[in-house]
Length: 334
Image (cartoon, rainbow, N blue to C red; front, side, top):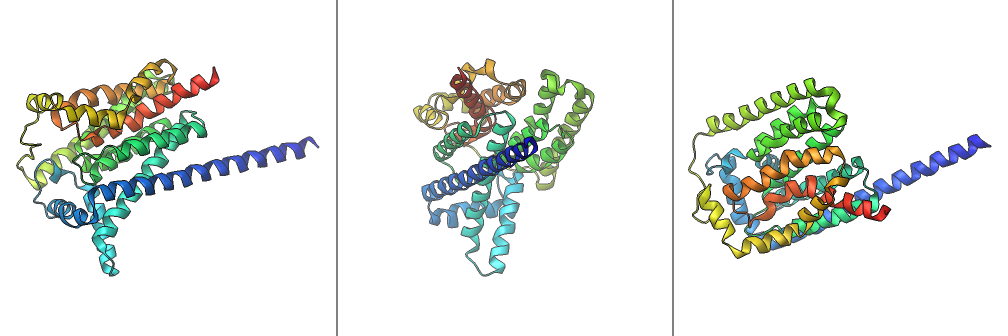
């Protein structure tokens, strides 16, 4: 009798897990469709077939300015979809752009949900986090095209975090290589591993191997970073609104009212809420925070136009949303 009851409990647990996975996947699909609809209509189909296509072609043909010419991975992936669609006689450009963005958003929502699961955040709270991310994605569109490389950057960071939490450190080398071909901001990915192995109990037993892998990953990043610049050559720097990186960007950023409107619209109070609950975070998330958030938040005002808040989707998705959800989870348990 007890064995029958045990089997029934196992079956019930399995059904619950399958249902949970189904709910998360369907939610991710719905959020992806919603965010893509907003992102595309914000630009218009005409924009995709003109400005977006011109920028894409410039990179594919090797004539884009710096740093865009060196962010090739996402554009080459999009180009493969476009050519496949063209061979089938379809509206290749629109299908290529929209389908790739749909795949990107779906991957981000699924990776976020997986990260939440690894951090022991329950499904109900995870769905809230996915909703917050959908909000951020639809409020980070200021002066932006589809920005494929930015969204692939988010995917790479989330993938790296999950690789580290799974202790499959060698995969980080390939993740870093792909990320470096996509965008130069991926240079912090090896630091995720270093912070994890040196500042968490879970990683202390693999410090020697982890440190070696992190160093190799940085070497791979450097090879990709400088290799792209050697292959395509020196390019004229693309200036944001006529301003240059450094103090010029910083002053321009902090003196624009739109900067604060866009930051609040995208991030809301999440950075503050997550920091308040910092003591309730697992050591792994704290390690990821120290590896990415301080450097990211301090450096970007000097190197980019931060009213274009898509740049902050990496720390938002990697640490601020999970950190806030952990704070909410702990309040529910009180």
